Image 1 (cartoon, rainbow, N blue to C red):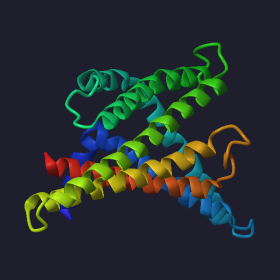
Image 2 (image 1 turned 90 degrees about the vertical axis):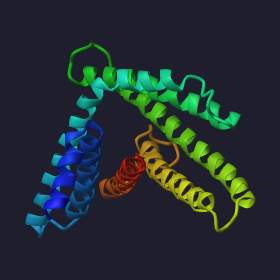
Image 3 (image 1 turned 90 degrees about the horizontal axis):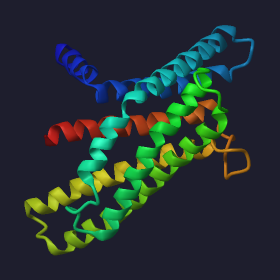
Length: 234
């Protein structure tokens, strides 16, 4: 029990870990709240609890938006360090990664303007800025899926060449599982991004709140698993 508490404290002490936990709570609350809110009015207590969880989820989402006001410099530092991906062996992976970094870099200022418009700090309509930020987020997710598919293809080629009993064989399998997890996380987030697009685009606006919460919860757990795997590698 004490070990679990210590692990949670260590996660919450880091910005990245805290964001992952808040994100999981945000979508988890929306999932449970959406399910409870669907119950008949006869079950008033469950319905009210569902509404409270939905409000809690909205506040956590707003919290994450405010915290992202300070992410531009860290994203810029990462993009600058990566540059044009000279260390990447595959040219397609390199350029997909560069385009992903561009989309991610542009996402933050667009979201900041949308937030500032909603807060009445600037006199512009927030709708178009939320739309642009959602488009950039969706583009980044789609590029992430394409990158992982390309990496999987390259790993399969390496897998055919290496010894089945060697350490490299198991390492490649771990990398492949990591890429599959990444695809799952990106696909669930992309489904939500499309839902938040304007009416008439694929399934935009058709997800009930509980389904948005389910997709977000899945991607959040994927993010927690990836963070844990990254910490273990370090």
